Image (cartoon, rainbow, N blue to C red; front, side, top):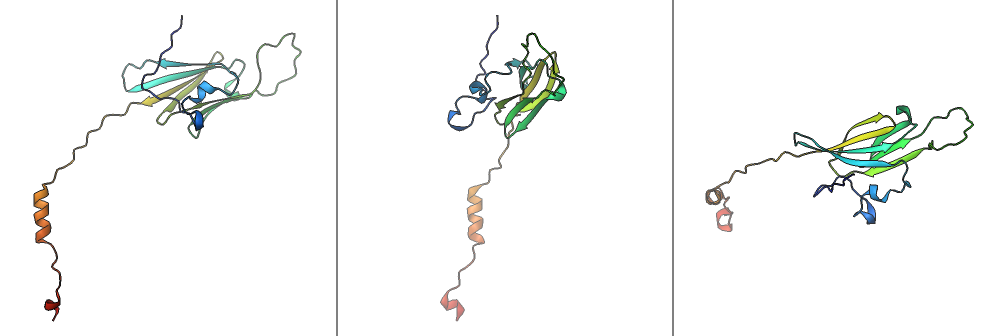
Amino acid sequence: MSSMTLLQGEIWFGGAGPDRAFPNFVRAPEAGYPPYNIEVLAEGDGTRNVLRITLAVAGFSVDELAVTLEDGQLVVRGKQLEERVRDYLYRGIAARRFKRSFGLADGVEVRKAELHDGLLAIELERPVKQATVKTVRIVNGETTSKMREVFKPKRATVSDAE
C-alpha cells in the first residue's frame, strides 16, 4: 500500500500564467511519458528539505539523457541515438524522444541526478534558512533634537547685511 504526503505549508513547484494555482507537474502536457514519482526523503539533521523525482526511462543511457535548469524550470530530455534497423515481432518498449518539465519554486535547488536500472532519480533540496537576529541600536531622540538646535545655521537678515 502506498501513501501520499501533503507538504503542509511548503512550496516546491511553481506555476506560471493564469493556472498558477496548479503546479506544472499537475498539468503535465507531455501525455504521461515518461511516467514519474515524486517522493519526500527524510533528512535526519533537519537542515534540509529534500524531494526525489524518479522518472522511468528504460532503454536510455546516461549519454541520451539531459537534465537542465532553464528559467526556473527543471527540464529532463531524452533522445535515443540512432541504431541499426531491427525486425521486431513485438515492440513494447518506447524508444521515442521526450521532454518533461517541472516548474520549481524560488530557493529550490537540484542536488544530484543518478541513473540506476532504467530509473532516473533527481534530488531537489530547499535549504532551511537560518533564523537571523539583527539588533538595531536605539538612539535617544531627545539628545538628537537638542543637538540639531545647537548646530542650526543662523539665517542672515537684512539688518545684518548692512
